Length: 372
Ligand SMILES: C[S@@+](CC[C@H](N)C(=O)[O-])C[C@H]1O[C@@H](n2cnc3c(N)ncnc32)[C@H](O)[C@@H]1O
Image (cartoon, rainbow, N blue to C red; front, top):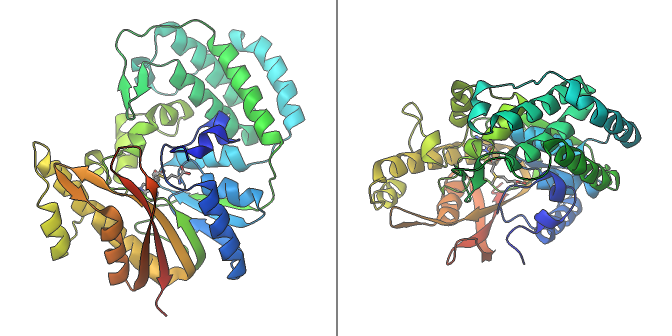
């Protein structure tokens, strides 16, 4: 089984999917079928990311809701789950192709000049102006496509975190041609989807908010492995206008469960559970202080998430979770989260699901049920 099977499946193939999260099609099929048998009419993903849960649920006619603190995740999930007038969109694209070069570039943030050469910035800016003129309903899809093209034509490369590639200039081909080709591919993939189950998406910090009642929950939360989802989607946030400055990006980082050093904040509470404090004190190396701080803030945020879950959960919650090694210490995130969930009043079971991208690491399924 490849690390992320969704990469080759529509609509994620054209619009993109977050790397490695353990929610395979088989697992989701099993979850949705068990949720139906248990009488759930809606399922919930509190960390919706690139939207595999809501898109899968929609195909199977199950109602779903998804939350994320990163507005880019919501836009991308919306682009995948909103049925549009495909015929009208295709004929608009034909005309837009002719028109785009005459538009005045719209570059939503001056920061974007760091990531593209001047000519590319101008071309992308004209495409962005085009999107602005399109019907509002089409914008999530058009922005999702624009962001993919902007990434390809940027100085950034994922390693897996985005890093500057020095000395990269314009490659062969055209920014416009790439945009209209990818838009065509995305429309083709979306046209053949079943937009059956209703999908609700909202921006929320799932460490401090949850719907009052949730029947079934299936998700992959952040893993305590120093991944900064805001950094991973920085170009996308800037081109869409969802963030315009470093202050905006900083605010979005602050809203994340602190699963990376960049999301830790002096004002965020730390877990005080002695068994966690002891484990985290084993983290060493030159970044020990930063790692320890974000880890204790991460587990504190997940603690509050689980107390909300234990109030709201009616049937079962399935979390796919990966372990990590930080500063020479093994962090069994799955076991630590299971213990926190138990202490919040839930019953927890752990099952290994398979290997992770990094050799020697495993992804686990954490299955939580209410005690009552
Ligand atoms: C592992 S990814 C989810 C991947 C997802 N299953 C998918 O289909 O791509 C974790 C997600 O949690 C989100 N997240 C981090 N902190 C959050 C918070 N406090 N509240 C809600 N979402 C948060 C991140 O923005 C990221 O999208």
